[in-house]
Length: 190
Image 1: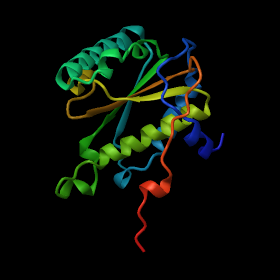
Image 2 (image 1 turned 120 degrees about the vertical axis):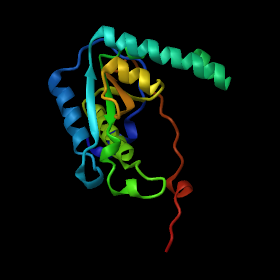
Image 3 (image 1 turned 90 degrees about the vertical axis):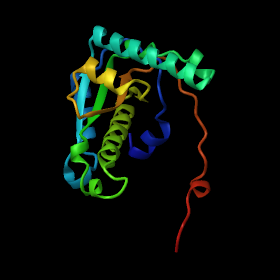
């Protein structure tokens, strides 16, 4: 699959088959992640691969607790209907932790110190596109309390749990979602 097809066809998946993902495919996805750009090539990411039912259920419970808390605070009705059960049923969850100490020169600028997050986001996008090319469904997930997730996964203090990538064979077809034309979202300065 070429990269343009992977970009256009990838969709967020929240319904997975229970089929396991071979370790060699997980390896390809992690390899794609580490080829992402990063400030000063500091590679500020760490990946925690979760396949065990107990850890996935602990993550699901934390996400559900967070969902309920956000529903109460925001009043957003969609949160009342949103199920996080896919966190327990996806065959693989990969948590991405970023190291703020590996942010690069931007840490010396006002409002800086965020480039490590940008690099981790690039690694996540590579993972999602590689998963698509491998015929897997994926989801970039962030609805959790960082400190609680750090404790569940044993992430070192000082490192930021930035996202969870859910992976598995999709259980169903995806709906094509519309996108705006690039000309509606771009400004050219000449």
